[in-house]
Image (cartoon, rainbow, N blue to C red; front, side, top):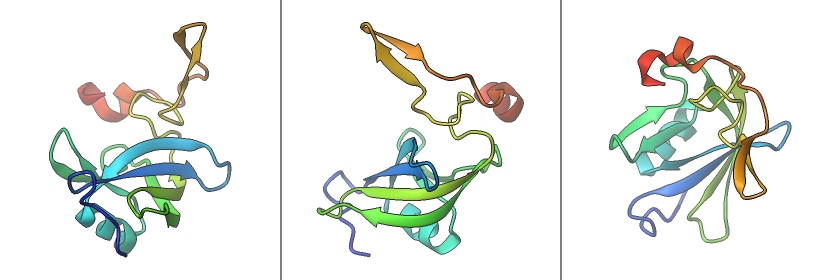
Length: 126
């Protein structure tokens, strides 16, 4: 497990992908401890750059990410984690994926309906 955490100041980007559909669900960052916890627990743990703390996806929402496969790129400085998403959506704004907007005619357009009400899940923190 020799990942290059030093290239980006102790972090590696982690692309989260649905293992069945191939859809990209989100992008997060991991430090060495978040990666270790992910491997040991089987649930994706990230490092929050804004809070300077570890967080396991689903701690608040219950929408956990069950690891199915972990891959790294040729430079060992990025991860692709294939998961089973446990819950109606991954995005804290209520969508299945964080990538729910597409550039159309110079503007961003939502291309799907929300999968859940974020206020009901996260309260005022949504």
